[in-house]
Amino acid sequence: MAQSSAHKALELYLKGLLGHSVLDDDDRAAIRSLPSTKLQLDATRNLSAAGDRPANVGLVVDGLIGRCRKAKDGVRQIVSLHLPGDMVNLSSLMLAEAPHPLVAMTRTTIAQIPHRALRDLAVQSSAIAAALLRDCLIDASIVTQWLFNIGRRNARIRVAHFFCEIACRAHAKGMTQGATFLLPMTQEQLGETLGLTPVHVNRTLRQLREEKLLTVSRGFVTIGDWDGLTIAGEFDSAYLHLPRSGDGPLANLCTREASPAAPAHLN
Amino acid sequence: MAQSSAHKALELYLKGLLGHSVLDDDDRAAIRSLPSTKLQLDATRNLSAAGDRPANVGLVVDGLIGRCRKAKDGVRQIVSLHLPGDMVNLSSLMLAEAPHPLVAMTRTTIAQIPHRALRDLAVQSSAIAAALLRDCLIDASIVTQWLFNIGRRNARIRVAHFFCEIACRAHAKGMTQGATFLLPMTQEQLGETLGLTPVHVNRTLRQLREEKLLTVSRGFVTIGDWDGLTIAGEFDSAYLHLPRSGDGPLANLCTREASPAAPAHLN
DNA sequence: CGAAATTTTGAGTCTTATCAACGCCAGTGG
DNA sequence: CCACTGGCGTTGATAAGACTCAAAATTTCG
Image (cartoon, rainbow over all chains, first blue to last red):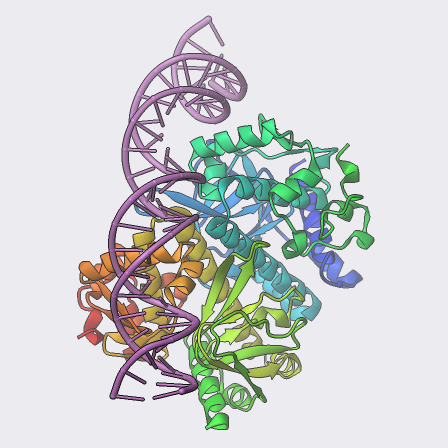
């Protein structure tokens, strides 16, 4: 199972790249055969730095991982979240930076891919280089959206928007079942992501539940009213750069405007 | 003056690239001779979108410009600021995205550089490609820092941190005179940048002024106590990826820890 | 089953937002 | 030269949203 999961994650990652970039058969094969070594991150749900001067990028195989920044007093802000099939710290390939510590939200396994291997690929194939770069830029686009949300929107909009985003991203990876998907985060971790206290997250979730928009229970999110949630979250998925509806069966959740026809999968 | 300023801006931009990347003489010459056309942005200090599907990137020649995101109700969040010698929308080279509207904080002139020209350069020289990429990633690093600040820090820290950052960036470009530099932003624009209301910005600035840390008047910022300001702003310039102290006379403002010896230029 | 973590709820406080008014300053036009 | 104007900065009063502290209820896990 270990080896096969890393393959599955690479396949997922490749699928993501194909959503915004064109890669020929050689490129695809090269990505599929990228070498990697497994790394298990703590079941303790707590902070765990992964390498101080990373010589690897991480591919999430299983679980859920975030990058975070920490203030001296220990307060944290999670600045990005990575589902299985997402790459973490890809930018470390090109920019030597003090790596943001990683937080595993739950027991998480990562396939570490050596910088060396990815660099070789990027040199061989400019299409792969471009695809990786776009992946970085999309990450940045998401951070920008989060900045907007936290800077200008109240707790209810923030929380609703967040679940819209994760729903879209999970759906694009085929990780939703109907209107439900797994999101193993505590309310404290949600707070660290959304710039809120856990108590306020709790109250906001209650409010959204009472409005029949959304239920969160035991790490599972169930969306009760997709249209309502996108309106509550003022959500427009464009910044995620997912393929348009025409591009595949998975895309119809994430049309730019929450079109009435969209939430077919939410029944 | 028109033509020469564009040259000066390119020179400044090149200097910035050299802070984190190695470029040989050919590369430098190629960048210096990049073609551009001037664009004047409004003196009205208000929103002005620059091109819907940009075929250019923008190089700030003069003035101050921001990217922003806007909510339906018109509330804005400025997600990045660009001083003269900074590139705007560089990521549009590689990622076709709904361009963030640009806001000119004051009368601003931009040298528009065609995508085509930059792409050619990047293809010719992988060193240039890498340098441009790093520039994008540094932008993203700044956005991430802002996300942290807005998500987790109160108004006083945010404001102090912001002025530390701008001081460092202006200083790296040789745009400070002693402890003073130009920052032609209204308090409303500061609020849109920091996720605060203009009224609260005003009160926070007063507080910092009373603490003798900082004075803002008529678009000029004067730092009264650099060490105090970095402490108040919990500032560590690492995320800016400016050259270290050893790399040149301009760098000593921005040592990672606000070392007692650092603020030589602030006297 | 019991311990620890997490979620939920309540009460009170604080930071920040909102609303409103006034003063200052630069530019304009008589 | 001066009144007028509009944008911006400043200040006050009040309200709202989010935080803090605390404790109880629930779930998770050994």
